[in-house]
Image (cartoon, rainbow, N blue to C red; front, side, top):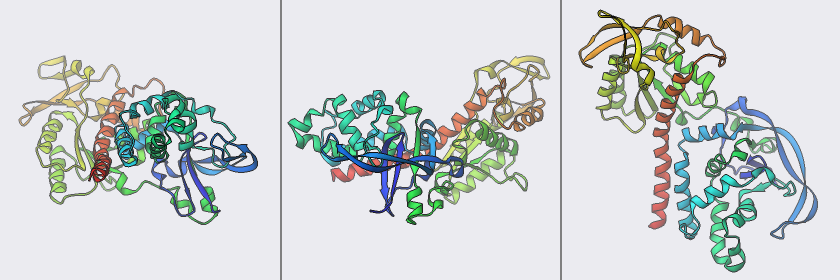
Length: 423
């Protein structure tokens, strides 16, 4: 019979494989961090037949090593892989045309809405080996709610292509749709690989491993402090996606200190047609904005995004000091370096340091910025009372930039697939 492998949300199977034939879902997990004991379902005694007339068995459940991660965290990883919610409808359209059913009568919106409402925690425990797969779940639970179950009796020829399409709906689209369901959002995504390892059809390292280089993003910043803060922010605020991001090696001194050097570095990367996925992040100050604008004017390739630290409302009335004395000023696009996005006390103040000719405005610097940075970098986990809101905003910008690089690749895949059917 061979050995089986299952990817499931709770008891609902959304993908399976056998022996050497299985899809690689290792990118949904973080190697050893996500190794856990997960349930494995085997067929016990035969116990009647199911609603399709097929034999069913009492399940035997064993807990063995596998990979497990909460569904909402898996969704975040899917987005960085380019499999966003927006791509789900494109896959649905592709399957509708491939299987020849009318996606105007059975719509993606209808499938989405019913999956948002169905109680996926109430799955029966008598489905035998592996629980219930999505195809059976669709016919048993979703068909009646969608009002298309009657097609099975009245017009089997019309129901069959819909059922066939749902059998082949990708695991990543199912995950996205289930992620919108409050009941499912509390469930773990589990990859039960142990039987393949024991059967010697694959090695443990085929499942428990780091991300492939092609899925990762290299972040280039203006200096070592920017990189250190971003790396640490990912570690304590978004640990479930931190492994997607790499930084320039700083062990022997940061090689791109200063915005001018970063601009020249970007020019060089573009000239050699670098293939890595890259995010170039500039400060929200006079120099950073000026050089980001210079970079954006270049022929920036699709695998590179030019980003600037986000403007903030509270920066519009920030304490500053300069030749004209102390006053409240707008430091957006003038003096908001990475340290301004940390938790600041009532003494926080920017000192104007000089006029930036290229930007046509004054440049400033946060006083005592090293002290604020050291306080943050000393944290081993999120601390009560520390304001992370500005750092969260920075991470949102970085992650959105990464998704904007990877999503078009998936989009192009579905566009070509749909066009191939039309041809």
